[in-house]
Length: 262
Image (tube, rainbow, N blue to C red; front, side, top):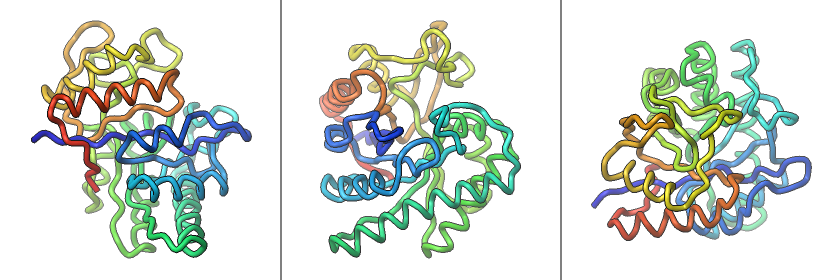
């Protein structure tokens, strides 16, 4: 039986306003990437996410970004490697602190189990070895502090994949159901036509094709081969709950088992 993880970026409370229906999304996915305060989220939203992950049996991942609340972490930045390493580690520690606080208060056994960088950082470390190495060093340190390795979720064939594997950590490749791809396998920039896929029929077709055929159609009609273990539906995509509901149902109907790879 084919298997795939279904993940979503959640806990993204931006300036006090939730950008997604977290409660509904948690019920549909198998892994949740939680904002750690630099582009969105705060201590309270992280604790809420930990509680939801436990209630729904969803794997909990950290979603660190550039320090860019104003731009929601979607603006590329030339951050010195040592600064980026420290800032990513700060975010991983913040989410782990929320895990510890909820565990102590509620007596639940939630665990931080992986890391998925956000937005512009995600795209930059796909090709920038220096920044990729900085992110990996932060993950290695966090892993050592936890006493167990944290896998990294990211783009297949990327610098972050190579550096993660070189550090002896597990890498999980993902693809996006609700984002457009260019023929070279990169994502269409968010300010360009075709960046978002909000049509349920198209999203369903893409999801099933990614799992069963390992390919997706680019915005210019070319087939792009992608070997994805996890599929993402962004929580802040318009109609995200309906989109994720349709994708989940279609995958199950196609005989695909939804399971976290951690």
